[in-house]
Structure formats: structure tokens, C-alpha cells
Length: 180
View 1: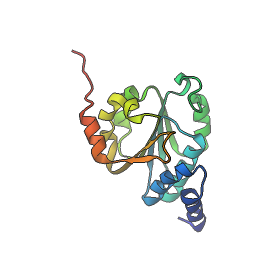
View 2: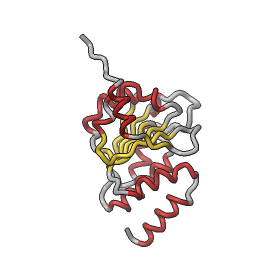
View 3: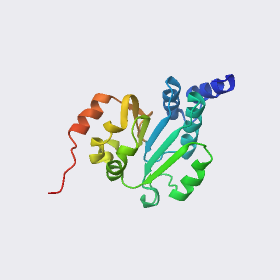
């Protein structure tokens, strides 16, 4: 990383606003992050900063995927980007962006095999454990041994790092039901 990139990282990791996002910037700075998955699109500004920081820190192109309800989100529930607006916004990031509309549990089932070896997973929701539902079963196959998963709840002070053991336990208890 160049000196300018280091200064930008230090600013984002220790002085940026809102304060709650700093832990995510530190996660990117702690090890090279080339693949980011966001379940429930959070702040578009934060996402652009995450992608930019990951690209500068790793020196490689970043793959960013987002699973969100987009237009299907209930009115009045946080900021809502349409799929088209999000696509236009993230196009400028020079990352390989994949936007996947739909309910997280169903969408994870559908796309888990194409979203493997994610370095950073961020789940944005008031109650992420319930929101993922049967999606927990598919989450471990999307991770590698050094992956980090954060729950970013609007009511919490900062995003919470979810231990790998908890992910495995929840995945074991959420086997999807198969039709006869």
C-alpha cells in the first residue's frame, strides 16, 4: 500500500463517521479482502468505501455481491435503493459487482455455490439470526477458514463478529426441508 492508501486506511479505520463502521474497515485492513458479501444492503456510502479500501489493500480486483430485497422491501424500512440505482452506483467502483434480489433464505439457497470463499460477510438487519432462516445451512459453504462474518444491527453500537462455531451450530440446526 502506498503512503496515501495507508493514510486513507487509518482515517477510515479510526476516525471515519459513523463510528460503527470502523470495525468493518479494520477487518479489511487486517488481511487482504478480495471477496465481500453483504446480505441486506446497508449504507451505499459505506459499501463504496469498503470496496475501495479492499481494492487498495489487496491490490487485486474486488468481487462484491449483495443480496437484498431492493424494490420489494417494505416502505419506510431504512434507505431503499432500487436494483437499477444500486447497479449504477456500484458500477463506478471498478469491482466485479453482483446484485442478487430476493429474500435472503431463498437467495442463499439459490446462489451459495456461486458465492464461495468469501473473505468478509456482512449481515444487515434488525434480527439477522431469524432473517437468514434456512440460509444458515448454506452460509458455511460460502466461507473459508479465515472468513469473517459480522452482524450489523441498527440497534447495536457496532457490528458483531460471529464466531465460526456459532455459524456451524446454526447451520446444523437449519437443514432445509426437501419435498417428497
